[in-house]
Length: 360
Image 1: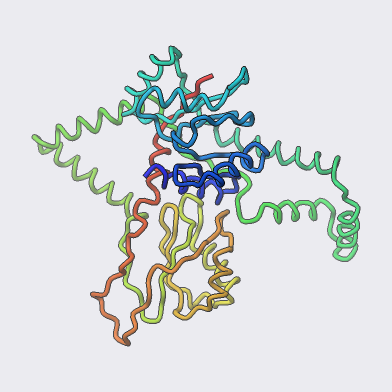
Image 2: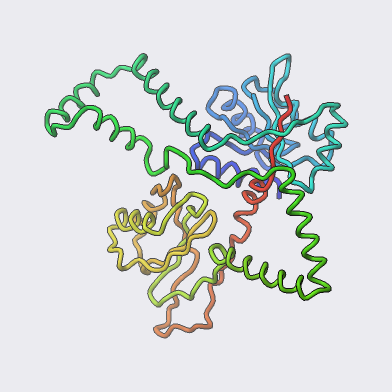
């Protein structure tokens, strides 16, 4: 399970534009050596590794160790954080800790004889400010080091031909460079504090206790159940049967990427040359979507759609069901592969509920 998780996590990081690679026991020695060499040369920035595969790694570029899963024993933790800050160098180790894992955190602190302090996640404003600053610095670096003669001529020609101010041309080029991925982050929900976690855990215990013996508790339980049902509508709604002549496909973009149905329809209509009226149902889930398209889509078109980017993600479209062969559609026919990817979002949910702490 851990080996598979390294590959899945690395793939998600790569899809978001990070230079990442997985390292686990299933990887051949030759590939392992090549991966580590790429890390040393700067071709890779992130290595997602199991405990066993990471032991003995000594790469000067490793500045941070992120403990994606909390280790089951203190010895493993010591080995993990030993990958950074080696030979007198400085390094940081960050640990994601869920409320139920605080006992293990206390054990780690006792073993290392060091207090691991709480780390605040950077706010949306801080991240956006850093992105803007980096963008400006990239412009300065390019102006100072790159040969721009050809591009000067092209921009000057465009300006004369279209009578467009240079500032507008520069803004258009910046947008072109950014692609479909939003440059600035949207504001997110407030991060829970220690007291928030303790209060929510306490409330859940109290609610269960009241629900057993009093009408008041029963009423609250019903209200809570109704509320939970509403929350799950978005990601757990039942998929309707396929219409005749349609095929169901999976797209690797979902709610967490802030995709909208219109984004998907527009991309597929443009790339496939398909009138939007022939595009069927679209269901958007946490980290993927499902769409119905006409049967008989050409293979070359589907291959092109795999490479299309929507909301910063490659669609990587894949066929997950076939339309029924018979002319009469039977409502009893089921999608054999329905629910195949039910645990795709498990890793993200696990991390999003954890709180990071830093050791210096």
